Image (cartoon, rainbow, N blue to C red):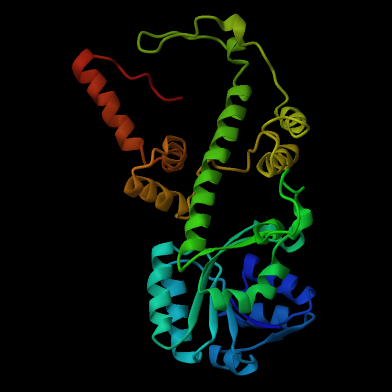
Length: 340
């Protein structure tokens, strides 16, 4: 089978390599000629210099995977493909697009008889070897036609032990990909996946921070009139080896996970994590998950707080904190302790 790929960043390039290794022919395009040139010499991979040339190299019905930044860039590529492709062709949006945009894009492409599959793609830089977890939305027939590509990109059934009670024929989800529903369904599931990811990451980070500061009782306690001193310093005399704690948690503990595995790698490489600023970005899915929870009236305090913590990490709350100090001074004459 043939696959056209638009976008040869870390994810796009590695998906191409996985698809090509699976025996499919890939026709690749990127706005950077150097990126195309770098991949064109690899097995089962042909480089092109335009979307028109990409369309000409693919047999019909064409399957074109778009792997570019979500938002205006993805919309721009979709608009170009609407003019370049033909009826019955299939566009796969494998980026982190907002599921509401998928519904709009699907309608636009449908005007020309082109079908859209939205594909939430999880696996990061490890996906080339491990495979990518795929959450797909869109037309049933389009999904069935593109399924050999999804099956190649996905991890396969051996990526995890079968769930007890799941006997007999192997289900689609057990192979690492799932047709979740109509347009937008794939990215909706991926959106919530990333919201959960925010919460899991935050809980690990907060727990490790508590361990790291468990020696606070050894530090000189300089009390002042505005800050409550540590009342029982003798209870906080522990010097934990944080990398080793992460390592032991990996082995048989209830919180064992791939995120913990990756955390252990990072801590082994840099126990103090000094090369990181502590400024945590968000790519949008956490915000969209919070909006969906509000619209549905579903409580999501953990996911929402994890998102808010990322905002706070960027010092965007500095003015708010100053305002809090100003209020304390006004109502109680509380003097702020100078920063170190």
